[in-house]
Length: 485
Ligand SMILES: [Ca+2]
Image 1: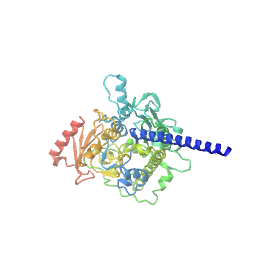
Image 2: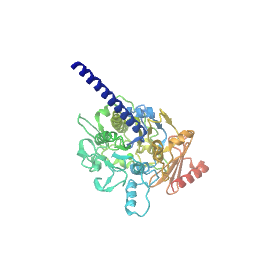
Image 3: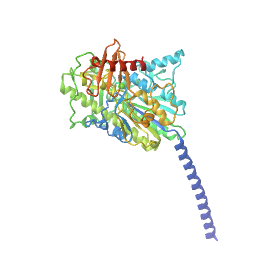
Image 4: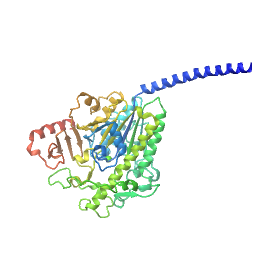
């Protein structure tokens, strides 16, 4: 009798268990279906002052395994040009999807316009995604000020760089005390006070050595953990890594990776003889250089380049940690990843150590877009594209409406069309503007002086051929003035 009852109990338990597991499976399938139907997430990784020199972009001597991994599965835009050779205006175009002012405070001036309520101001890319159901979060240097706040120490919550854009805009500061301190910080809390007393490069030794990007990466990972837990809302997470911006400081272990690496010679190191947008490398030269000048001291120049390379590899390691967390969460299958450099950097080319010129070295930067859903596989695009195009491209990839006010074009639509387009890329400083197409770069100075370089013969932009080609000058000038008056 007891045995019979026990058997009945077991059968009943098995029956209940099977119903339960069936419904659990159904619920899980339903959840999966919901995940699948949800719009893809966006992870936008901005790297400060990153030259287009990754191993995957043809620079054999650079150690960049994590960015290369992204290039291995995504679309690498080999001719991506930014719209300004400076952090603030370049990031303005990325985030606003429009050409803007050439100043570093372009976004703060836009915020002022919103506060004045005098004119209509179109939303930025994060605000656009937010209004289309996305949770928007930024960590680190995404706009000009890490954390997106103004005031003396860049931590004043009443002075917002991009109003209405982010649900959270974060900048961990640790021993650097405030976001302004992190921006030019060296190891373990060293803040730039008097610039010529701060070393232009550093390789700090020790197991516990920290730089601001370590904090940014940890916070980005925390945010990813939270954002990927909420399956009901897609996220737009922007992470801004500060290195390889000056000063070139990274843990010594990264510098040591280059111990046996031979750097290629600096390409075309001569100072231009004619009028150009050449400058005296003021940003670099104002740091402590131990009295040395890389233009006249080859040994010092080599060490500057090695420290820059170390910073690139250190930034690459941060990308690796963030990508690893994305993978661990499982959200990598539904997250579009964009890796973007905010502009290039001369490491001695044309005798410049810095950005701010309108030469190729200042304007050319890496852009990689990886969309795990479209399964496009590895692609390399050699057509000229510009930062302006990222906003509409992300809209198309996520199925968000492309706003009429966005001035760029979706690179996906164009690539699908025929892969042979050539749209041209524009950039500007306060003193001049430029347009680059497949074959030429034209630079128009505010005083009317013109430079024209023929990239089919002169990729280094040495010889100004404006006088030889008045037709090309005329045509490109008209287009430049029409697109950015
Ligand atoms: Ca920058």
